[in-house]
Image (cartoon, rainbow, N blue to C red; front, side, top):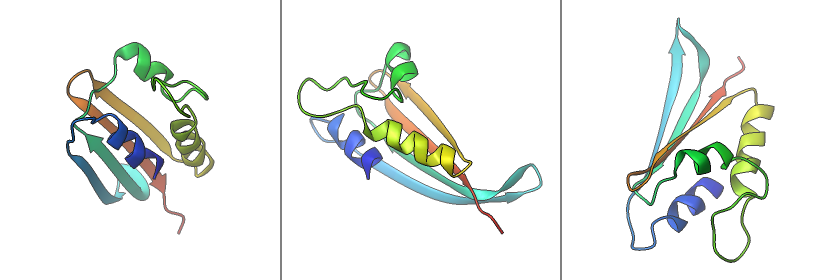
Length: 103
């Protein structure tokens, strides 16, 4: 939910949020689930992207911020997964969560 709210907030004039979930089950990677959330919002500079998962770091002008992405990052790490952020100013952001499936 945090990722969807972040995506909504960076599209002040509207836009598109995409959610794609796929299973991973091949010889090169451990079995798991990949969840990819993308938006065509404002995007982030490299400096902002590097700090985006830091607790209490926010680019929001007012209100609460700075906890959503760190919480997602912690959840993914505790699940033994990986979080990847890709972004470009003016083009949007892609957040990819890769979570293992214990079996």
